[in-house]
Image (cartoon, rainbow, N blue to C red):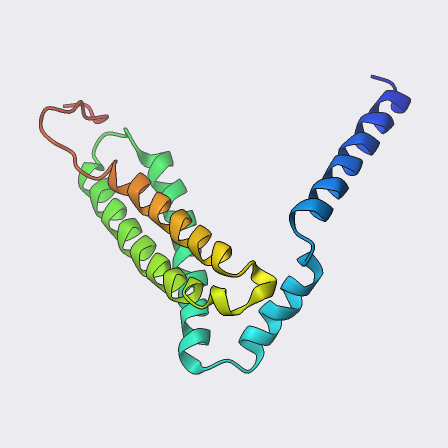
Length: 147
């Protein structure tokens, strides 16, 4: 691919992104300011919920990858199960904190109002249901661990 063709594709992509942002979310610049204002002089509960959400979901991100890397290795079936339980606990805590934060989104018009609030509820529900679908391990299911 020549530099000219690559440049045209990049220019087209940037044009489409610019059109999408203008049409879809006109308040994008004020969102960052509203986020800062919301936490700069926030009540202690809101600030703690933000920190809980950030810490717990960061831990979940790391533990999830550790668990995926170790799955199927012989001799660590119990550790794998406990790591999964810990991941689920941190996911639950982080999601509950996120739901508390999302419950206030309808008052901040820069976030998108009630649409943003229900969008976050939907995202939290999908995250939890996706994990809960993988939790029950019955004896009839095939185990990734050698017997």
